[in-house]
Image 1 (tube, rainbow, N blue to C red):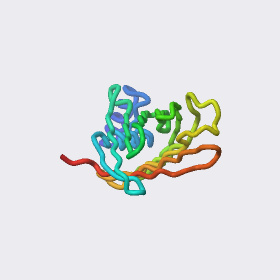
Image 2 (tube, rainbow, N blue to C red):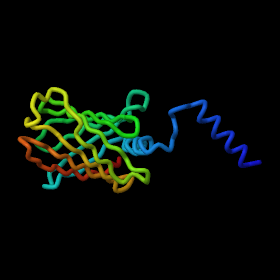
Image 3 (cartoon, rainbow, N blue to C red):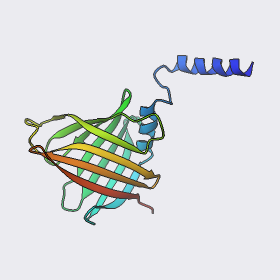
Image 4 (cartoon, rainbow, N blue to C red):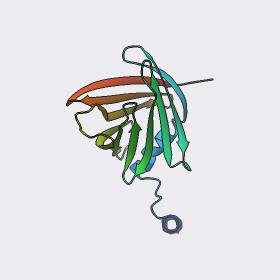
Length: 167
């Protein structure tokens, strides 16, 4: 009897809110991004200071990241759920807007690997642009971002290690 009641409740919830299943891997991964909200401090692999800030916007459907690294202009990245994945648009100081997508696995999300899927204002793919992002979730207070910059078919890796800023 309890099993039938539980199945009825589950069926009712799924009927009332179709498409809002909380166990989709994209939803789990997106909640991990939402949990990053707030300021973060860190360094790049050369020890230069870097800062980033995550903020949930647009009724919590988008995560906005602003990243500043020593000697570089501010960059803005927007993350959203896209079906079974997470999509991002990166607004770069070089005035192009790479789009990338990650498809998280079914288990606990330890990293998201965003692959290039196109770009706005990029007339030629040989022009320098961000081409890949690997975001690693070490724990609730530590993340690593590995950005791959591609120019003329050659890749350069920029790695940032961030800790949640405490007050």
